[in-house]
Image (cartoon, rainbow, N blue to C red; front, side, top):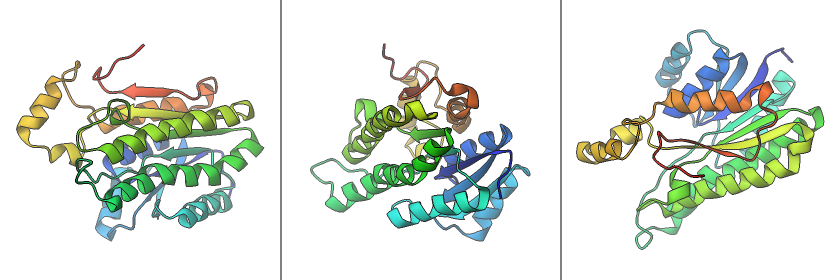
Length: 248
């Protein structure tokens, strides 16, 4: 059923950054579908409790499955009448130096971090163009700009994600659809929490603002780029990294 709310689909919605994106989009007036791999009931209950009654629902989705991506978008459109906002935030790491990286590690990361955005954008963009409105945000990474030791697969996927962003932005800009990337730096998630204390300390010391980012720092950028009023911003890569990487 169509509602007056903007309808948003966020992949990786149960993760640290995804959860913050879901919450802030909902607080800003969207009805949000948080899509992620199937999860235990306790995790889903904790997620729902953390939304404090905001209009956020969950659905299981393996973003590495092209047919499942298309079906998810079709389901959202059928139940809500449209899909206004797509946030591709799903991502995994399979770190290893290139000499030790297996083809499977490479393929897994590219499939989840890059191919999924292609499949979801392709499924969503046609109806956005037809209605003359759409907002797509792809969560890239500072690693896609700088490279990172042991992350050739991850850095390649994240760099490719912004290439996809720019190309699609050019294709749909005249149709009321914007496509942008956000490149977080180091963000406080279970991944950074697992870093050895001395490595984390060196990381924090390298960030000009003197701290790692919070998931809400990324979520606020998503809300900004997906606003109705952000229609003149497209094809950009917005760094949210505390000054870790600066460029003209």
